[in-house]
Image 1 (tube, rainbow over the protein chains, first blue to last red):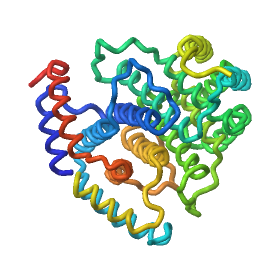
Image 2 (image 1 turned 180 degrees about the vertical axis):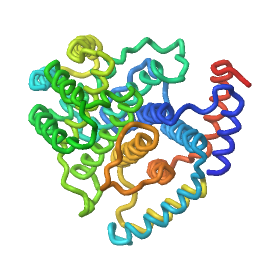
Image 3 (image 1 turned 120 degrees about the vertical axis):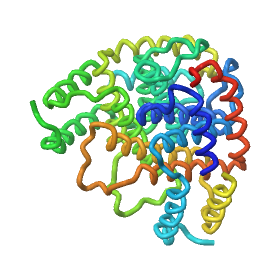
Image 4 (image 1 turned 180 degrees about the horizontal axis):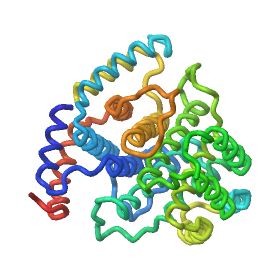
Length: 102
Length: 102
Length: 102
Length: 102
């Protein structure tokens, strides 16, 4: 994630406005998760696609969610890699007996 | 809410497809909450409105969220009024000492 | 909804802090929608329930979502009933040919 | 992201249950985004923290969101890196004149 965080920071740094406030980025995150949800329903659910809507892509919507999340992390000086690695360790412990192993 | 639940049921009942599955309605709910989030950012946040987007209305987006939630409740035979009233009672108890009274 | 909006307003009015800012209520809405999502996965999905979690109720989670939404509407002086009725009319028009009728 | 996607896949592969269905992972994503929203309100908003709640960490909640998203991507064979890079290019084009440059 480090490379991603730097890449996003380079992009945001070109603009005067900089990072939004945490609540504003969160609202944006909800918007992007909502667009991903729409795409999930289009592909795997019952919703008829309206013709006026451009063909969006599940992978693109996921990238938008990650971008927004990386903005939030950058704006708060959070190193996502280290949190991700400690989470994997936590899951290892917590879920040891939660799901049946192969 | 009873009137609303009946009204939505009358509307849905006209169509063959009926209510979606719980997970599908939930995805739709996320979509609508995402559109409300976008509108909140447009009005109270930093996001420049794109010209191609139609002027949406905060109240309309809220109505969409409620509609989706009422669909979910109807599809599961849930009486929202009774849950709402018991929730108000629960809040009364729980928050008695949580916020300073006037 | 009018009765609900008044009831929530009476409840909030007892406390000094009053309504939160739109972005703060929106964050709370996401929190409540997330709890509803968890409940949906518990009932209709694959997630094993952890013993430490209290038995929550789908209807209660929906009531929490509605409460939060009503707070947002009240704080912005939005009359949900009128928006709901105009939305039903809009859906009537838009979806006339979208879903097959019975 | 490639390393992350492989790491998550190695973790999931140890369990018989495997990846959930797209709608189920989406519900989980909403749950995790909701927990992040709660944390944002705790730190930057008005919500008094209840004593019974464990101190959670903004970075940990973000890691949970990313984990869930990576599960969704893996289950659908989506390469997040390539979508992320094409998104950055798209943003470059789209936002060229949207925000004032430094």
